[in-house]
Image 1 (spheres, rainbow, N blue to C red):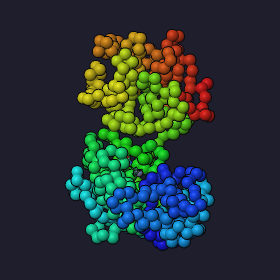
Image 2 (image 1 turned 180 degrees about the vertical axis):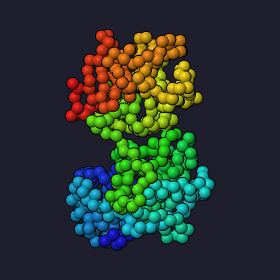
Image 3 (image 1 turned 90 degrees about the vertical axis):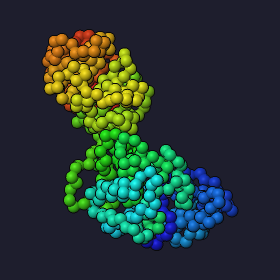
Image 4 (image 1 turned 180 degrees about the horizontal axis):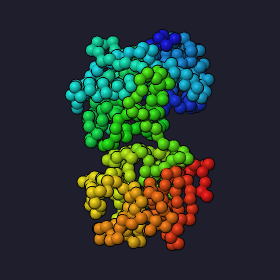
Length: 473
Ligand code: 01S
Ligand code: CA
Ligand code: ZN
Ligand code: ZN
């Protein structure tokens, strides 16, 4: 049945496509056409064309959307608002399972797909665009047994172009910012096509503008049939979160999703795709933990969890969604509550974050704290507010920095247990919270009471992240 349908396929807003249909639509006994229009707008992203072009473009677009809907419901793909079609529309129920079935049919059957670049960018050279697209297809081709070939002829499966504002597909672009690009799910005609908003500041670097490679990988995912993913680590996550240090690669979830559609590529991937950590994994450990104003921030790989006393949900986000300049896999972080800044450490570098922005002039070298060059990285850092001291943990030792004087204190480093009785192994992270100090060691954390100078509790490291099955002991 797949080849029968014609014209425009869907669309771009999986959020619309995959939501349960809303039950209340404007129904009027003699308004079948209006009803169908509203229905297609709601569930098939049909956008009536307005203005000059309306008469010319409208009937085709409407009919194409109608055929798409008819295809989905297994009706005759007449493109007309016939009684069976209206009946199906009026009996709309939660379409989630239908939508799933529908999605599964939206995939290419050929193993070699052709693409054509029909209109280039006004910001990049043709060579830059070709290179970016070749690299973007390669990422998908490494996961599934598909081949992508660029061709100059006009009948390519996937036609890619840079356009601005209205470009006659019913989804006009919006100028710089907002929507960066969109793509059509697999199918004939416009199906599989990818449009980039030509008014974005497209670039081929991570440092500024919008990375065309990052957006291309995401759009090509749609062109292959993938909807948006709710995994913030996935390329198919619906937000551009490309940081300065981001290494572009498919995530575990992207690979799983695309392989479910097209199967696995025989040769294994060079690099295992990164998995997004699960906050309730009992083996979870952290890279760093810090306070930040009212919040506690837990860093892990490319991600962080923000625990705020008044947020109900503790969501995972990419570090780069807040701080594009920061790297992944950080070593340590602490908040200097007297100066209102957060310091983030990785290897011999550190960054300073103030009022939620990474300050200019960073990264700087940790030798500025007085570390000798033999210190290559820091395990954890802890700011002691009353004493205006910062303790750095490196292996089994603790170094103490005097924030006011700006130097490392005499007599350090010392064995950690000497300053912190009960803490006798290297630590992953440390944080002060509500008058207690928490040391993170693998999947555990130790609560230290500074008044009696001893460990008072041992808990799961992810105790703060609201996992129903985990409780303190
Ligand atoms: N395109 O695939 C998108 O996801 C659109 C929004 C659709 C509703 C059309 C878009 O440009 N979204 C922006 C984005 O960052 C916010 N998308 C992810 C990306 O990396 N391109
Ligand atoms: Ca835009
Ligand atoms: Zn378009
Ligand atoms: Zn998208």
